[in-house]
Length: 363
Image (cartoon, rainbow, N blue to C red; front, side, top):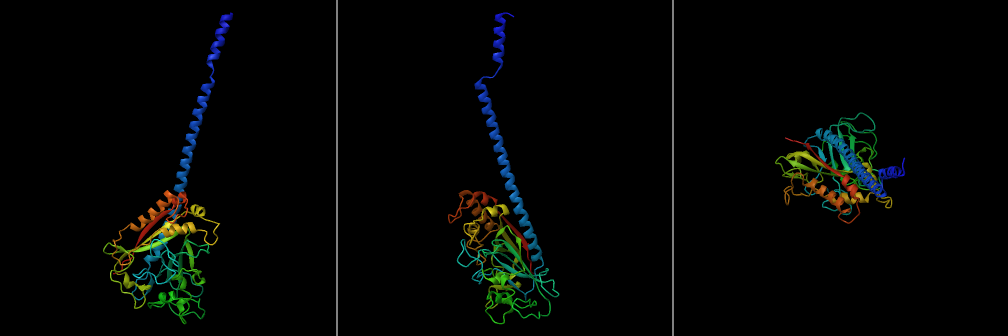
Protein backbone atom coordinates (compact mmCIF):
# COMPACT_ATOMS: atom_id res chain seq x y z
CA UNK A 1 0.00 0.00 0.00
CA UNK A 2 1.33 3.34 -0.93
CA UNK A 3 1.77 6.20 1.51
CA UNK A 4 -1.00 8.16 -0.23
CA UNK A 5 -3.46 5.25 0.13
CA UNK A 6 -2.59 4.86 3.84
CA UNK A 7 -3.24 8.52 4.51
CA UNK A 8 -6.60 8.31 2.73
CA UNK A 9 -7.63 5.25 4.81
CA UNK A 10 -6.66 7.05 8.05
CA UNK A 11 -8.83 10.03 7.12
CA UNK A 12 -11.81 7.75 6.42
CA UNK A 13 -11.51 6.14 9.90
CA UNK A 14 -11.17 9.55 11.52
CA UNK A 15 -14.33 10.84 9.86
CA UNK A 16 -16.36 7.79 10.98
CA UNK A 17 -16.24 8.75 14.76
CA UNK A 18 -18.31 11.32 16.83
CA UNK A 19 -16.98 14.68 17.69
CA UNK A 20 -17.10 16.04 21.26
CA UNK A 21 -19.86 18.48 20.30
CA UNK A 22 -21.98 15.67 18.93
CA UNK A 23 -21.47 13.66 22.12
CA UNK A 24 -22.49 16.61 24.30
CA UNK A 25 -25.63 17.22 22.25
CA UNK A 26 -26.58 13.55 22.48
CA UNK A 27 -26.11 13.50 26.26
CA UNK A 28 -28.16 16.70 26.62
CA UNK A 29 -31.04 15.22 24.59
CA UNK A 30 -30.89 12.03 26.63
CA UNK A 31 -31.03 13.98 29.90
CA UNK A 32 -34.02 15.99 28.66
CA UNK A 33 -35.84 12.80 27.71
CA UNK A 34 -35.12 11.29 31.14
CA UNK A 35 -36.36 14.44 32.90
CA UNK A 36 -39.58 14.42 30.87
CA UNK A 37 -40.06 10.72 31.62
CA UNK A 38 -39.57 11.30 35.36
CA UNK A 39 -42.05 14.15 35.30
CA UNK A 40 -44.62 11.93 33.60
CA UNK A 41 -44.04 9.21 36.19
CA UNK A 42 -44.33 11.69 39.07
CA UNK A 43 -47.53 13.16 37.65
CA UNK A 44 -49.00 9.73 37.12
CA UNK A 45 -48.04 8.75 40.67
CA UNK A 46 -49.63 11.88 42.11
CA UNK A 47 -52.82 11.32 40.13
CA UNK A 48 -52.94 7.67 41.20
CA UNK A 49 -52.34 8.62 44.85
CA UNK A 50 -55.15 11.19 44.71
CA UNK A 51 -57.50 8.70 43.09
CA UNK A 52 -56.71 6.15 45.78
CA UNK A 53 -57.55 8.76 48.45
CA UNK A 54 -60.83 9.54 46.72
CA UNK A 55 -61.66 5.84 46.52
CA UNK A 56 -60.92 5.64 50.25
CA UNK A 57 -63.29 8.50 51.11
CA UNK A 58 -65.93 7.21 48.66
CA UNK A 59 -65.91 3.85 50.40
CA UNK A 60 -66.18 5.47 53.83
CA UNK A 61 -69.09 7.71 52.81
CA UNK A 62 -70.96 4.81 51.21
CA UNK A 63 -70.65 2.66 54.34
CA UNK A 64 -71.83 5.50 56.60
CA UNK A 65 -74.81 6.36 54.43
CA UNK A 66 -75.81 2.70 54.11
CA UNK A 67 -75.91 2.40 57.91
CA UNK A 68 -77.96 5.59 58.20
CA UNK A 69 -80.36 4.34 55.53
CA UNK A 70 -81.22 1.31 57.66
CA UNK A 71 -81.76 3.41 60.79
CA UNK A 72 -83.92 6.04 59.08
CA UNK A 73 -85.93 3.41 57.21
CA UNK A 74 -86.82 1.73 60.52
CA UNK A 75 -87.38 5.00 62.39
CA UNK A 76 -90.47 4.82 64.58
CA UNK A 77 -93.02 7.21 63.16
CA UNK A 78 -95.41 7.57 66.07
CA UNK A 79 -96.79 10.82 67.34
CA UNK A 80 -96.15 9.90 70.99
CA UNK A 81 -92.44 9.20 70.63
CA UNK A 82 -89.73 11.70 71.37
CA UNK A 83 -86.81 12.56 69.08
CA UNK A 84 -83.89 14.99 69.23
CA UNK A 85 -83.66 17.11 66.09
CA UNK A 86 -83.13 20.64 64.87
CA UNK A 87 -85.90 23.05 65.78
CA UNK A 88 -86.63 26.74 65.15
CA UNK A 89 -84.74 27.81 68.26
CA UNK A 90 -81.84 25.48 67.57
CA UNK A 91 -80.51 23.20 70.27
CA UNK A 92 -80.99 24.41 73.82
CA UNK A 93 -78.03 22.45 75.12
CA UNK A 94 -75.21 25.02 75.50
CA UNK A 95 -72.62 22.45 74.36
CA UNK A 96 -74.48 21.62 71.19
CA UNK A 97 -74.64 22.80 67.61
CA UNK A 98 -72.91 26.03 66.61
CA UNK A 99 -74.93 28.51 64.59
CA UNK A 100 -73.02 30.56 62.07
CA UNK A 101 -69.81 30.30 60.10
CA UNK A 102 -67.50 30.28 63.11
CA UNK A 103 -67.92 28.50 66.41
CA UNK A 104 -68.71 30.21 69.65
CA UNK A 105 -67.29 29.15 73.00
CA UNK A 106 -68.91 25.94 74.21
CA UNK A 107 -70.30 24.82 70.86
CA UNK A 108 -69.37 21.63 69.09
CA UNK A 109 -69.96 22.76 65.51
CA UNK A 110 -71.39 19.53 64.17
CA UNK A 111 -75.02 18.46 64.13
CA UNK A 112 -76.38 15.77 66.41
CA UNK A 113 -79.53 13.66 66.08
CA UNK A 114 -81.23 11.00 68.20
CA UNK A 115 -84.39 8.97 67.55
CA UNK A 116 -85.95 5.58 68.12
CA UNK A 117 -85.54 2.94 65.43
CA UNK A 118 -86.63 -0.67 65.10
CA UNK A 119 -83.09 -2.02 64.82
CA UNK A 120 -81.04 -4.16 67.24
CA UNK A 121 -78.94 -2.37 69.81
CA UNK A 122 -76.51 -3.10 72.62
CA UNK A 123 -78.06 -4.32 75.87
CA UNK A 124 -75.99 -5.70 78.78
CA UNK A 125 -78.34 -8.28 80.29
CA UNK A 126 -81.74 -9.83 79.81
CA UNK A 127 -83.98 -10.02 76.80
CA UNK A 128 -84.01 -6.92 74.66
CA UNK A 129 -86.54 -5.71 72.17
CA UNK A 130 -85.87 -4.94 68.53
CA UNK A 131 -86.17 -1.25 69.42
CA UNK A 132 -83.13 0.96 69.99
CA UNK A 133 -82.26 4.51 70.79
CA UNK A 134 -80.12 5.57 67.81
CA UNK A 135 -77.90 8.66 67.83
CA UNK A 136 -75.28 10.14 65.52
CA UNK A 137 -72.60 12.67 66.40
CA UNK A 138 -69.05 13.71 65.56
CA UNK A 139 -66.95 13.45 68.70
CA UNK A 140 -66.02 16.87 70.06
CA UNK A 141 -63.88 15.82 73.04
CA UNK A 142 -60.36 16.61 71.85
CA UNK A 143 -58.73 14.40 74.48
CA UNK A 144 -60.48 11.35 73.07
CA UNK A 145 -59.04 8.99 70.45
CA UNK A 146 -62.41 9.42 68.70
CA UNK A 147 -61.99 13.19 68.32
CA UNK A 148 -63.54 14.48 65.07
CA UNK A 149 -64.79 11.02 64.13
CA UNK A 150 -68.39 10.01 63.43
CA UNK A 151 -69.98 7.90 66.14
CA UNK A 152 -73.23 5.96 66.20
CA UNK A 153 -75.15 4.86 69.27
CA UNK A 154 -77.43 1.83 69.20
CA UNK A 155 -78.76 1.51 72.75
CA UNK A 156 -80.99 -1.53 73.14
CA UNK A 157 -84.22 -1.02 75.08
CA UNK A 158 -86.76 -3.17 76.89
CA UNK A 159 -90.37 -3.43 75.81
CA UNK A 160 -91.66 -4.22 79.30
CA UNK A 161 -90.40 -4.29 82.85
CA UNK A 162 -87.54 -2.51 84.55
CA UNK A 163 -84.11 -3.55 85.68
CA UNK A 164 -83.61 -4.50 89.32
CA UNK A 165 -80.46 -2.40 89.27
CA UNK A 166 -81.29 1.04 90.63
CA UNK A 167 -77.98 2.64 89.63
CA UNK A 168 -78.18 5.69 87.40
CA UNK A 169 -76.48 3.81 84.59
CA UNK A 170 -78.90 0.87 84.55
CA UNK A 171 -81.07 0.37 81.45
CA UNK A 172 -84.62 1.66 81.47
CA UNK A 173 -87.64 0.39 79.57
CA UNK A 174 -88.99 2.25 76.60
CA UNK A 175 -91.78 4.59 77.65
CA UNK A 176 -93.96 6.12 74.96
CA UNK A 177 -94.12 9.55 76.48
CA UNK A 178 -92.75 12.81 75.12
CA UNK A 179 -89.99 14.62 76.92
CA UNK A 180 -87.57 11.91 78.02
CA UNK A 181 -84.80 13.16 75.73
CA UNK A 182 -85.47 16.72 76.78
CA UNK A 183 -85.01 15.84 80.45
CA UNK A 184 -81.70 14.18 79.61
CA UNK A 185 -80.48 17.53 78.30
CA UNK A 186 -80.87 18.99 81.75
CA UNK A 187 -78.28 16.56 83.04
CA UNK A 188 -78.12 14.44 86.16
CA UNK A 189 -78.91 17.30 88.52
CA UNK A 190 -82.66 16.60 88.48
CA UNK A 191 -83.44 14.12 91.25
CA UNK A 192 -85.42 11.12 90.09
CA UNK A 193 -84.68 11.78 86.43
CA UNK A 194 -83.85 8.34 84.98
CA UNK A 195 -82.93 9.64 81.54
CA UNK A 196 -80.17 11.95 82.78
CA UNK A 197 -77.85 9.02 83.42
CA UNK A 198 -78.03 6.36 80.70
CA UNK A 199 -79.37 8.64 77.94
CA UNK A 200 -77.33 11.76 78.56
CA UNK A 201 -74.73 10.90 75.91
CA UNK A 202 -77.40 10.40 73.24
CA UNK A 203 -78.01 14.14 73.00
CA UNK A 204 -74.97 15.69 74.67
CA UNK A 205 -71.47 15.96 73.26
CA UNK A 206 -69.54 17.87 75.88
CA UNK A 207 -66.24 17.15 77.60
CA UNK A 208 -67.80 15.49 80.65
CA UNK A 209 -67.62 11.83 81.52
CA UNK A 210 -71.37 11.51 80.96
CA UNK A 211 -70.77 11.84 77.21
CA UNK A 212 -68.60 8.71 77.26
CA UNK A 213 -71.09 5.95 76.56
CA UNK A 214 -69.96 2.42 75.72
CA UNK A 215 -72.90 2.04 73.35
CA UNK A 216 -71.23 4.49 70.95
CA UNK A 217 -69.02 3.05 68.24
CA UNK A 218 -67.00 4.78 65.54
CA UNK A 219 -68.58 4.10 62.15
CA UNK A 220 -66.82 6.88 60.27
CA UNK A 221 -63.22 7.38 61.36
CA UNK A 222 -62.67 9.68 58.36
CA UNK A 223 -65.85 11.76 58.81
CA UNK A 224 -65.09 15.05 60.58
CA UNK A 225 -68.11 17.18 59.59
CA UNK A 226 -71.82 16.32 59.94
CA UNK A 227 -74.81 18.45 59.02
CA UNK A 228 -78.41 17.61 58.23
CA UNK A 229 -81.48 19.45 57.04
CA UNK A 230 -84.93 18.70 55.66
CA UNK A 231 -86.44 18.50 52.20
CA UNK A 232 -90.08 19.44 52.60
CA UNK A 233 -92.97 18.17 50.51
CA UNK A 234 -93.28 21.55 48.80
CA UNK A 235 -89.73 21.18 47.44
CA UNK A 236 -88.06 23.68 49.79
CA UNK A 237 -85.12 22.87 52.04
CA UNK A 238 -84.93 24.05 55.63
CA UNK A 239 -83.61 23.21 59.09
CA UNK A 240 -87.14 23.31 60.56
CA UNK A 241 -89.04 20.04 60.00
CA UNK A 242 -92.48 21.64 59.66
CA UNK A 243 -93.97 24.68 58.01
CA UNK A 244 -95.98 25.18 61.21
CA UNK A 245 -93.87 24.20 64.18
CA UNK A 246 -95.84 23.01 67.23
CA UNK A 247 -93.38 21.91 69.92
CA UNK A 248 -94.29 20.41 73.24
CA UNK A 249 -95.12 23.11 75.80
CA UNK A 250 -91.82 24.37 77.12
CA UNK A 251 -89.81 21.73 75.24
CA UNK A 252 -88.23 22.94 72.04
CA UNK A 253 -85.12 20.76 72.19
CA UNK A 254 -86.85 17.45 71.65
CA UNK A 255 -89.93 16.99 69.56
CA UNK A 256 -92.26 14.25 68.47
CA UNK A 257 -92.85 13.07 64.95
CA UNK A 258 -95.96 15.17 64.45
CA UNK A 259 -93.42 17.84 63.58
CA UNK A 260 -92.30 15.82 60.55
CA UNK A 261 -95.63 15.93 58.74
CA UNK A 262 -94.23 18.28 56.08
CA UNK A 263 -90.94 16.40 55.59
CA UNK A 264 -90.22 14.46 52.41
CA UNK A 265 -86.64 13.50 53.31
CA UNK A 266 -83.81 14.14 55.72
CA UNK A 267 -80.67 15.27 53.91
CA UNK A 268 -77.35 14.38 55.53
CA UNK A 269 -74.11 16.05 54.42
CA UNK A 270 -70.66 14.93 55.57
CA UNK A 271 -67.07 16.05 55.11
CA UNK A 272 -64.58 13.19 54.76
CA UNK A 273 -60.79 13.10 54.89
CA UNK A 274 -58.84 9.92 54.15
CA UNK A 275 -56.70 8.29 56.83
CA UNK A 276 -53.34 9.23 55.29
CA UNK A 277 -54.30 12.90 54.97
CA UNK A 278 -55.72 12.96 58.50
CA UNK A 279 -52.34 11.77 59.76
CA UNK A 280 -50.69 14.61 57.84
CA UNK A 281 -52.88 17.09 59.74
CA UNK A 282 -51.86 15.77 63.16
CA UNK A 283 -49.85 18.35 65.11
CA UNK A 284 -47.91 16.80 67.99
CA UNK A 285 -46.72 20.25 69.13
CA UNK A 286 -50.23 20.96 70.47
CA UNK A 287 -51.08 17.85 72.52
CA UNK A 288 -54.17 19.55 73.96
CA UNK A 289 -55.70 19.80 70.49
CA UNK A 290 -53.57 17.88 67.98
CA UNK A 291 -56.17 18.24 65.23
CA UNK A 292 -56.69 21.98 65.66
CA UNK A 293 -55.92 22.55 61.96
CA UNK A 294 -58.69 20.16 60.87
CA UNK A 295 -61.00 21.62 63.53
CA UNK A 296 -60.39 25.10 62.15
CA UNK A 297 -61.31 24.02 58.62
CA UNK A 298 -64.37 22.23 59.98
CA UNK A 299 -65.57 25.43 61.63
CA UNK A 300 -65.19 27.24 58.29
CA UNK A 301 -67.70 24.82 56.76
CA UNK A 302 -70.94 26.69 57.44
CA UNK A 303 -74.10 25.46 59.12
CA UNK A 304 -77.36 25.26 57.28
CA UNK A 305 -78.57 28.71 58.33
CA UNK A 306 -82.31 28.93 57.72
CA UNK A 307 -83.89 29.18 61.18
CA UNK A 308 -87.30 30.43 60.00
CA UNK A 309 -87.86 27.78 57.38
CA UNK A 310 -88.38 30.50 54.76
CA UNK A 311 -84.86 31.75 54.35
CA UNK A 312 -83.33 35.17 53.73
CA UNK A 313 -82.78 34.36 50.92
CA UNK A 314 -84.34 30.92 50.64
CA UNK A 315 -81.90 28.03 50.67
CA UNK A 316 -81.70 25.85 47.58
CA UNK A 317 -80.71 22.23 47.20
CA UNK A 318 -76.92 22.03 47.04
CA UNK A 319 -76.21 25.44 48.63
CA UNK A 320 -74.68 23.94 51.75
CA UNK A 321 -72.50 21.49 49.87
CA UNK A 322 -71.33 24.23 47.49
CA UNK A 323 -70.31 26.41 50.44
CA UNK A 324 -68.30 23.56 51.89
CA UNK A 325 -66.57 22.86 48.59
CA UNK A 326 -65.72 26.56 48.27
CA UNK A 327 -64.08 26.51 51.72
CA UNK A 328 -62.03 23.44 50.78
CA UNK A 329 -61.04 24.92 47.42
CA UNK A 330 -59.92 28.17 49.08
CA UNK A 331 -57.76 26.24 51.54
CA UNK A 332 -56.22 24.25 48.68
CA UNK A 333 -55.52 27.46 46.74
CA UNK A 334 -54.30 29.74 49.54
CA UNK A 335 -52.78 27.20 51.91
CA UNK A 336 -54.65 28.49 54.95
CA UNK A 337 -58.13 28.76 56.51
CA UNK A 338 -60.15 31.96 56.89
CA UNK A 339 -58.35 32.70 60.16
CA UNK A 340 -54.95 32.46 58.48
CA UNK A 341 -54.14 29.07 60.02
CA UNK A 342 -51.79 27.18 57.70
CA UNK A 343 -53.48 24.27 55.95
CA UNK A 344 -51.50 22.02 53.57
CA UNK A 345 -52.96 22.42 50.06
CA UNK A 346 -52.39 18.74 49.32
CA UNK A 347 -54.49 17.87 52.37
CA UNK A 348 -57.31 20.22 51.34
CA UNK A 349 -57.34 18.71 47.85
CA UNK A 350 -57.97 15.27 49.36
CA UNK A 351 -61.09 16.28 51.35
CA UNK A 352 -64.42 15.33 49.82
CA UNK A 353 -68.03 16.38 50.50
CA UNK A 354 -70.95 13.94 50.21
CA UNK A 355 -74.69 14.07 50.83
CA UNK A 356 -77.63 11.70 50.60
CA UNK A 357 -81.40 11.97 50.87
CA UNK A 358 -83.23 9.61 53.25
CA UNK A 359 -86.95 9.46 52.59
CA UNK A 360 -89.06 10.14 55.67
CA UNK A 361 -92.68 10.36 54.64
CA UNK A 362 -95.28 10.71 57.33
CA UNK A 363 -98.84 10.72 56.08
